[in-house]
Image (cartoon, rainbow, N blue to C red; front, side):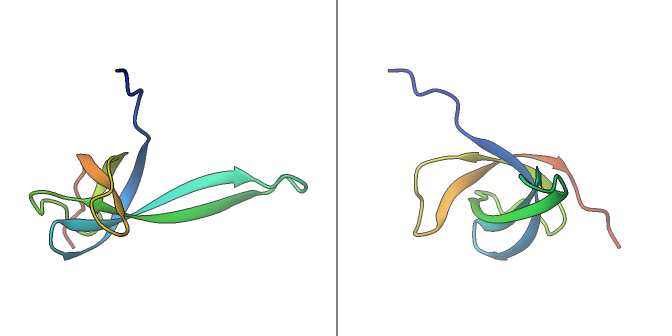
Length: 86
C-alpha cells in the first residue's frame, strides 16, 4: 500500500529543554487577500529528536509522522545548519 509523501517543513529550533523533543518555529510569508501586503505567519511544532542532537538556533527539516504524544506529531529529519556560537 502506497502512503504518499509526508509533509515537511523547515524551521528554527527555539527550545530544546525537553528530553528527546525540540520546539521548531516555522515562518511562512502569505499575501493578504485584499490589500496584497505580505504577512509573516509563524507556527510552532513539537518534534521528536531521538539523539538530543539539536540546539537552539539550529535550522532543521521536520517531517510529519505518527502521533508520539499529545502534541508531538513531527520528527527531525535532518539538521540543515548549525547555530553559530556566540
